Length: 109
Image 1 (tube, rainbow, N blue to C red):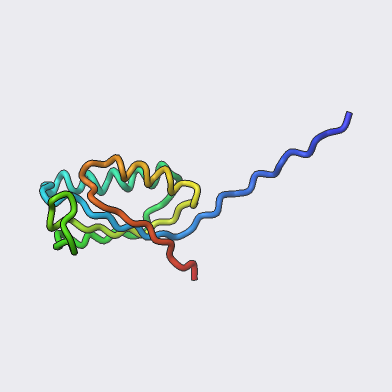
Image 2 (cartoon, rainbow, N blue to C red):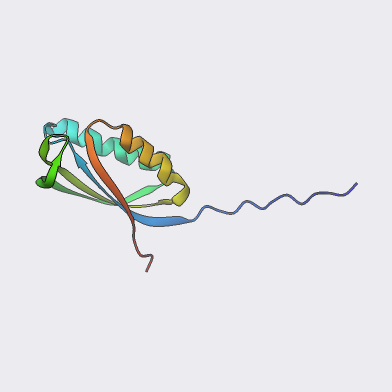
């Protein structure tokens, strides 16, 4: 009886990313902080870690989005596997208070 070699699982490579998202401008401070915490929890569930969070505050948008002319901007630096990005993207799309978001892969240097 010959044994079939099992594939060796490759560890998932963690890469640095930036996430910028714009939250609805009509949120009060507590609701806005809750949105930021939910995003952090979603990143943690996706086996990622948030290394830095910058809250840029309420700023005007370049063009109207959903009939809004301003929004709360948040920048997050995070490390997570690339395979988890679709899961996080789906989560962000389903969040009503998040108007727009963008992932950017940072240089690893």
